[in-house]
Length: 576
Image (cartoon, rainbow, N blue to C red; front, side):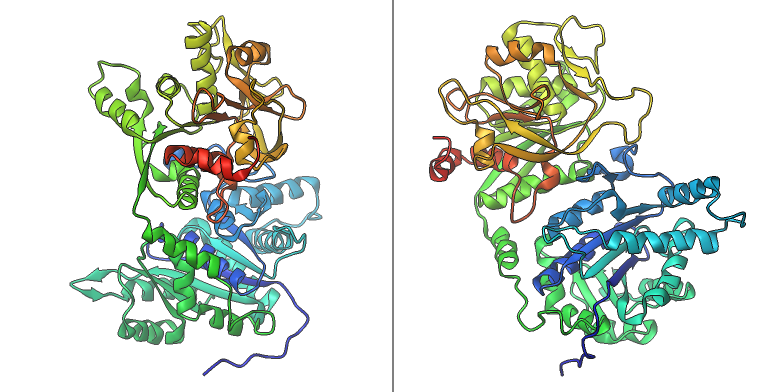
């Protein structure tokens, strides 16, 4: 029987809060992103907030080993990689306001206390910190995140960590108060838990304990997501229902699937959209009977059907640590889907390419040689830089498709200066301040002393200023469908030295894209008459890639690696 809905009232913001228990890393981010994708299919506009209970103000100064990649937002905010998941799945553009950390909350409250805003009162965790958290959530939820320019209908909130952590307790107390501030019709708490299989039996006790801990904080979940290798058995759902104060229909199985893009479809199959419509009184606003997930479903199923593969070598320094390059890997996957190829990603340790006597040199060099294409992503620090230059040189000389991002772009400029122009000691001033040929230099406006939030950050425009000498449009501009100006996100302190630009450009490595002043180099490439695809970009295109809209530089790399770029360019009818 279909649920009945209350009459449609004046619309208020609806909040869906997702927390997790038992262990971290259960996939709350993917679950909440998938839930949002499903709501979008039902015609609901969504926004998203990530609560990180750590004391850092943002993720900008954290090591990739510690916390995975730093995801850069359009306004320059450096945030948790989960915000990247939200942006990719929901096709929205978030701001630094959408990432709440303990550091941000306490900084705001303490600065107010110093200004005297609390009029002499004793400043306490309750009510001052908890009120600040609630005010921040309401404020961030109203920020438009899509092209409509209007606030979303539903705000998804993920609470990082697990229930019971000391550092997240203040956020749960704030959310306990928040449910009364916004009203029961506008607040829906969901819980992600682990259902392990021991002796062929699905165990519910971890979920029971997690929900019990949540209820002891004054919060009762209305939906429970159960992560399990296999689909949840009905008996298991009934048991969780009996002990955790939810209907068995509201116990959702989130079992392992062929690829992550199936998860929104999995949630929809279990009628989660009906449950949300009922719990949040969204029936009159949601398209419940015929949600439009056609494009998403076609993409999710097509990924399973690809038979041909394309091999890409990733030349990095955090090798094997997928989270350190998460957006790069996702962008490669999006582009491989557009090329109808399975992605075979090969990791190459950059530092192992630097010394031929190294015991791993031959194995890593063989991976580089056997790959169809090569990507050199961004990074910081001197370790492995010369290995990245060696990879760039090999790809340039052997006509192997190459994409360099940020430091990978700088590596190809340094390599070209050393081996083509003949400046043997050419280097980046980041690694050798004494070099007589600093082809990459520190940007003059950046403060060398401060680490956090102190780079050229966020969305900046790049203008395609140059064509090749034969009159052909640059490969990069063609991949952007001939656009003259593109907006991409940046995160760097060093740039190509303006004093060497003309020499490098005239020697053959063409700086085809520059910032709007014409002084900062953004895109460099070799002409297609010399190389199928040899492109470097100072910005980070991976932050704007989407499953159904791959990032243009990545799309070009995968097309060239699959031998399909010439055909694609011919069909585009631009830049011929």
